[in-house]
Length: 63
View (tube, rainbow, N blue to C red):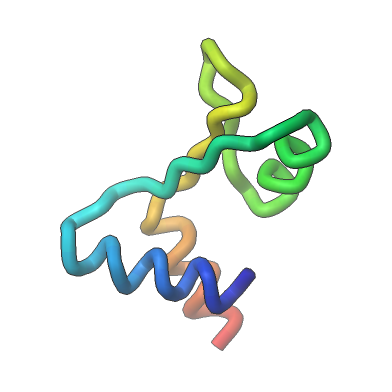
C-alpha cells in the first residue's frame, strides 16, 4: 500500500491533484479503505476519498 500511495502522491504532484478517490466494489472493500483513512462520500458510501496532503504526511512518517 505504501508504494501505491507514494506513486499516487508523485502523480498528483505532476498534475496538481488534491485528493485520491477510490470506488469500493463491496462493503468489505469499503471497510478496507476506511481503515486506511479514506472517507465515504455522503451520497454513495462506495466512493471514498482522502486528501493527498494527508497521504503525503503518512508516507513521510513511514519513511
